[in-house]
Length: 202
Image 1 (tube, one colour):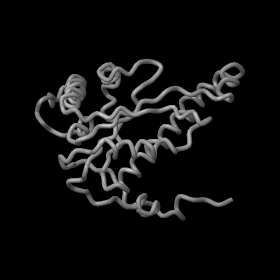
Image 2 (cartoon, rainbow, N blue to C red):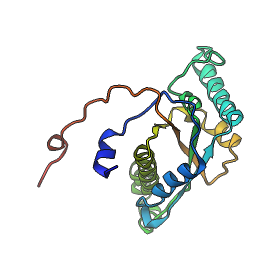
Image 3 (cartoon, rainbow, N blue to C red):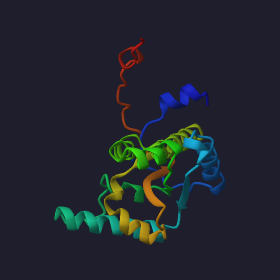
């Protein structure tokens, strides 16, 4: 699929068929992600591809329990898809794990201008931007291969518990989850703002 066509047709999918996602297809998506630009070519991310139903169900149970505890809604065990647990309805769950990145600029600011350093780490965060680029290329590759994806941060309401279950250890951290599978139903694609509206020339 042409890259511009892929970017145009890609959308978040929240209903999946049960067809398994072959391991070689996931590796192809991961390879596309590896080509993404990262600060200092740090390549500071990796993927945990979860396809075992037992593990996916355990992850969902962790998320549902935390959501129930926080909201008091008692959704755990009701079989409902929510913005936090819909990953569990996909045949493949890709957990995005990132490592911290500190550039020469960051090190200089940490020593010379702590306030500016703090702002840069929490608002600019070059390391996180590179990881986001990797996720973008992963989901575009998936779309080009006929798969639907949903880039999720809702499950990270249970971030610490999921990291423990997935054996993610500091300084690495779980930063996103991508649900992957063949689309069962695609919602209407929401409109996008025109390029002329989001671009200013000076």
